[in-house]
Length: 240
Image (spheres, rainbow, N blue to C red):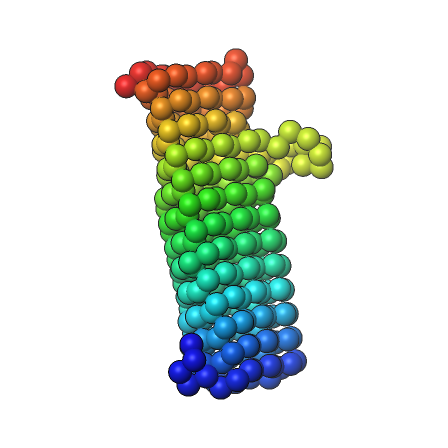
């Protein structure tokens, strides 16, 4: 990032600038960067826009910032209602607090969601933790998946070593359960150690499988053990 670096870029209000290489970039208000942007630190406070790809060491959107391209870097955080038009690929962490929208795939070592995340295609990580909602248009793949549901979530397929899906059973959302159902929907869920609640799936396949309350599963395949809650609906299960 040092080659061609221009120092810092700070845009306040309705300012605009061309892209390029910078040390720190701060968009305060409705600042616009026209073109690809590369910097060590990126902050967007308000409704700023980068009309191109963003390459960063660390980046953060606070508000309703938009990246009209992809994001590559180390750590990236969305707080508020940030969006990225293309994919996000990170070496380290992705944090979403509020509402984040990714127009392509999301790849990071660690992903944490508190709120709502929409990912157009695949999501790949070592650790996936969420308290809220997510919609993943492709495969959710992670070594460890820990989900606490606060509303409807979905993925085409889910795969991992340990997968825990827990339904929200108390607090504010519990009072409005008929209007805000805590439910995860997927075609296929596959892993080693599975503990599922409030899940609708066509196929669940694992080594040790626990199907908890409010689950509706067409087929469960297990290698070593299976535990079915009395409130779970499983049409068929078999040892493989």
